[in-house]
Amino acid sequence: MTCKFHEHADELRTNARALATRGKGILAVDESTPTCGKRLADIGVENTEENRQAYRGMLFTTEGLGNYISGAILFEETLYQKHADGETMVEKLNKQGIIPGIKVDKGLKPLAGGLPHETYCSGLDGLTDRAREYYAAGARFAKWRAVLQISSDGGPSNLAIKENAWGLARYARAVQEAGLVPIVEPEILMDGDHTIGKTAAIQEIVIKEVYSACIENGVLLEGTLLKPSMTCPGADCPTEAGPKEVAEYTIRTLKRTVPAAVPGITFLSGGLSEEAASVYLNEMNLIGGTPWNVAFSYGRALQHSALRGWSGSNLEAGQAAVIARAQANSEAAKGEYVAGSQPSSDEKLFVAGYTY
Image (cartoon, rainbow, N blue to C red):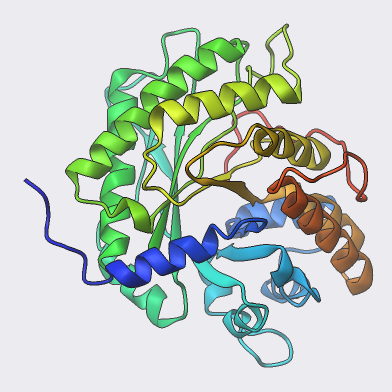
């Protein structure tokens, strides 16, 4: 038995296709206030609303950013915030042709009955009503991050896989009711010493479970995007995998699990360096032959150099850095990136047990 047809179906399809425009990707700038504070502390800037406003305003007013970026995921504060010049942040994005989005989950909570480190993602209560408010404020898509971890004690457990898949599906259905395109994000952390083959096997199980739950909940797949991790070995695995091997495993895994109805896959960078995130994405697009657009939804891999360039006041340096990485990833999303052709950092951005 299928659920009733979505009243927002046409708009959801249109916006999902726009977000999945070939050669464009998503800027994830939805860090919570504490996480943003850690980033600002790294450059010696105080974590005040004024400084967060200045930093994010610097990103959104970068000339030409909309040539490479189709959407920006915002934290709730930013969705309702004004730029220093009085225009809203939403207006700044709309002027660039960038679709505003919003992080709607309420964070990870311990999963009762699961393994000690396992979590579920909270925030389903009242979600459709909240999503309607976000829509009224200008958001047109949403993001919800579920996290799973491959561990030596048998993780992820079947309970964690099922709970997080169901949560993603309930979220997707709830925000579609309000007219928001859901980005479905089942992240598999890089923590651990597992092989790339182990990652692929677990990822296949997880993504199949996610889409089974989405179908059962009547989610309009044409009005969604998937934001998966790349299929990489654990950060402590003694056998490293190069970009080509990661690309081959990732595309193979997704071809086995992601319905062709989904218009776009926008990868998270998962702690890869700026340069590696571009190179890996480029290798995936060189493989080609996928039914969905293959692009990016990067946070740290788009912002790392920009934050350091800006350093609290240097607008020109910050904007030069973000446009360089946006262009690099745009080229990678078409299989046209030449490694090292844009300024970048090769500093690994992996953080064990990363939270945001």
